[in-house]
Length: 342
Ligand SMILES: [Zn+2]
Image 1 (spheres, rainbow, N blue to C red):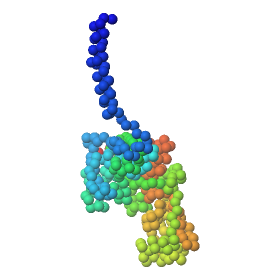
Image 2 (image 1 turned 30 degrees about the vertical axis):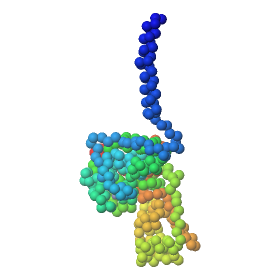
Image 3 (image 1 turned 90 degrees about the horizontal axis):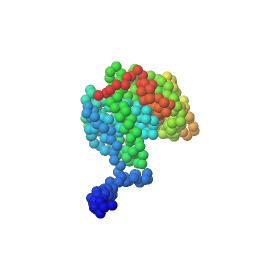
Image 4 (image 1 turned 120 degrees about the vertical axis):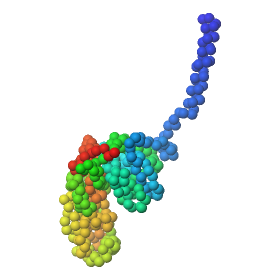
């Protein structure tokens, strides 16, 4: 080989290859992603996994009752926070999609921009509060990171997917968003809305809900001393004839609803609904039975929640049997349509 060819090759090496190596070497030090072991992830501030906001998407004004602040956020981002708060992320994605549609329906129905009345609880002039007992639960991205720790990325991605796949969809009846109810676990059947809330809604009928027997709260028992049992009742009904000695003779279940929950019950001469008895004693379900012992009263419950509309555990079971979110929603909400909400 001629000397000048060697010289050119050397120049090519110096000018092109060596700088490339140096530059690559430098940038590598700064940009190689840090791969964390699972146990390290809790301390690592992982990047948020966000849902994209699209052009015509409305915003919702919420009141975060834990942090006591108002926030305006894009609707689909809000739905992600609701699903994260209201349903275990371990549930089947079709159940998470059904929950996303239910959450979005409740939001649109309450939003003042769509003729809703907003939230009246905190005197804050917002569309929704984040208290589960009033509007619906919602948790921020930070709270999701805290709750899920090492599972944050997997859980959040799954929920974002469920919300994205149902983007904009809500449940309607005769063209309007329905009054949505859902709860944790049924007793095997759903309840008619009129048995729990004093309203008649055509899309709530008693339907079977299968496969919930193994759910953690399907069966529970609540134990009260005789004194506690009487005191709790008298706080609500001071004129009741109930005493710690006459409990057995002063309690009579008068009837059951079509779903097997207690319809009406007579306690110390006072007649009340099973659902009201449930809320007075803070027990899981209006499907309950008593056992009276010498010094205590035990109440055995089946199911967890009011029973109206979708059972979340039931939705998960249906999904695991291959049903889609539309099958689930059409099972629990009768004769409704699934439409675009905005
Ligand atoms: Zn509220």
